[in-house]
Image (cartoon, rainbow, N blue to C red):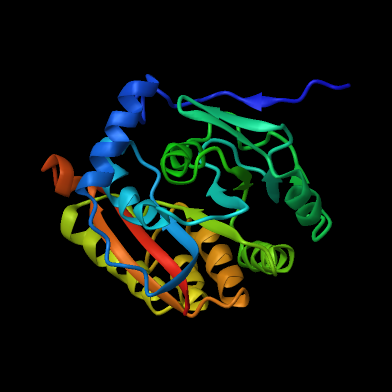
Amino acid sequence: MKEQLTRQPSVAGMFYPASEKELRNNLEELFTKASPSPPLGNIVALISPHAGYMYSGLTAAYGYKLLQGKQFDSVVIVSPSHREYFNGISVYNGSAYKTPVGTFHIDETLRFDLLSKSERIETSSRGHGAEHAIEVQLPFLSMMLGEINILPIVMGDQTRELCFELGNALAEILSGKQCLLVASTDLSHYYPYETAKKLDKRAIDDIKRFNYEQLMDDLENNITEACGGGPTVAVLAAAQQLGATDVQILHHCNSGDVTGDHSGVVGYLSAAVVKAH
């Protein structure tokens, strides 16, 4: 039998503590500080940032804290590719992602189903090796949901066509299933504080209105910025087809709010996409 690949942690010790004990303590502290408003319905998807925990960890905790006591069969995480450009979409071809707080096995059934929906979706390790945008979500999931099965997806490019193709495919394969979608994204990068706030407000307003078509337009026209804008559009499109009705903004800030350095900041957002009770 062919030995299955397990993806090893790439940014442990950089984006978050490499020690299991230290990481758990860090997460518990973040969850204690986070005070999200109760969800307005059943959670279909989260939008979550992916910077180092000292910068965006609290924002991420606002979203993940809402999962406490919830149950899902699998979590589908859609990520940009920061280090490796390629045409299409890559679903990890191994058996698991390993983290200091546990190992997350790939949902092979969902992977098979997704691959059947589009020739633009491949199973490979392209985009997964050094990518942090999926990895940093997993310890938060571990604390709330345990070692749940995942489907890690990296978008090698974020064209309008590909975003909506992925959104439609995810909606088809997740229909009737109890799965959580996660869009991994930060907002604008390295603008002065006030400029960043204006850029980020546009993205946040589009997301709050559940208007992913407008978000796609604004991204294409450089009216706003988000490194995971494509994953966010895809996840919002899928969530709406799965019955989601509202988006709840939980927390947003930028790195300047954390460090006090306003010269060039990165924006962070946490939001829940919900289906009314």
